[in-house]
Image 1 (tube, helix red, strand yellow):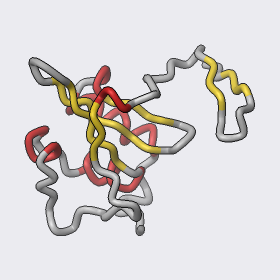
Image 2: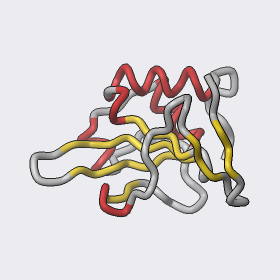
Image 3: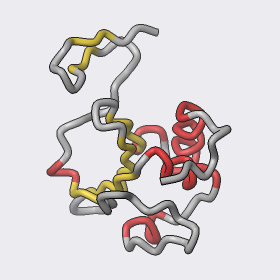
Length: 115
């Protein structure tokens, strides 16, 4: 997949997504390097899962949450290699990681994030 916005950093894209969809609704799973946008409904929540390239595209070209959940993407939308687009909130095992939380990386090595 080609990065549609190579000059945009992931951190900047996450800030733009947080501004558009609410910072509490944007999750970065660092181990898998996927981004989640939580869409809250009265009875349940849904998470739209994005690759880094899709997150950058969405940061530059915001879509409505209804279009995200319904997978109504524009023609130039970066396609995911494994077609991962959404998961229900019940299937999510990650939460937002704050600067002073600890996490395990893919080798089960403890990483301490420092601000």
